[in-house]
Image (cartoon, rainbow, N blue to C red; front, side, top):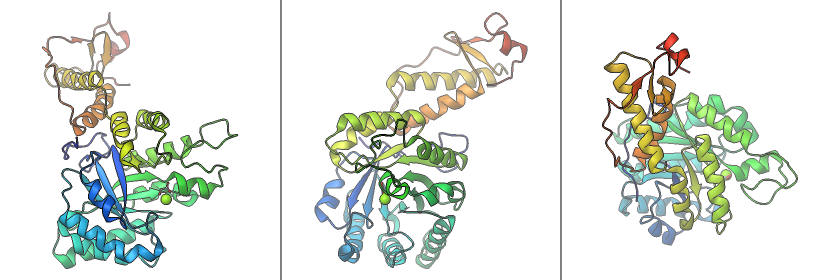
Length: 349
Ligand code: GLV
Ligand code: MG
């Protein structure tokens, strides 16, 4: 199922509408067969690729395929993206101009690969603005996802994340990143043998922090071993737990596993909504900063945490099955239940 889009943001720092991106399917722009097939798949985002999945000799023809597929395809609620070639190539500017001019309202996002400097994003923002003005389209409608996939990109990630109001997400590119660092591995996304720690924790966390500090989503890159669904489930659950919003998929068989890993469980979702309602009641009706729900203290920080889960659940199409008989259920915090809170009723963790 492709969930409805348009929920407001999950994190207090997010300013753009939260569009679900649990699974982002890579579709080679040179393959009409894959462009057709992708339309019926249950991914949240499709990105039609003009970059690494397309051979240099097929680049120009792929532009036409992608334009045709976006204009005549049935994409449902999916977020429709195109990955253009990077700014150091001769193809990049015509990719943007031709695709935006050729698809009008049938394109939501440009994925910009190999972003090593904020000027790459500024270039794309300005070019999009020129094309939108020329076409009489609303300026700023088309969003940008920036791929961070080498040492320079990671070193500049904060400035990149701040480079344009069009940015919606930062995307980790493990294959190029591993090559850039000289990791001794031939398996994309797999831990390099011989290194005792988690080789991806630092780039993943660094990108997540930069994304969140600028109100953006964070997306993990591909898991190249298509048949390894157990491995995919494990790495996806791990990045979802860290806070990531989604992950690339390179094969239709990976979509379900990835959607599932990024969708909060039913109980977790119900609990998050209950926390929000309880907190709202106690702050608005009772003018209290904290309350106890099922023996657990909840306050502003708890409600922010609950909001992140609730928004992801709503965006994934979850609905409440239980209406609480609150607001009488939760108890206000008292000295006997939480001395530290009762000393300062409006304190938060
Ligand atoms: C994706 O573009 C990657 O390099 O992993
Ligand atoms: Mg790459």
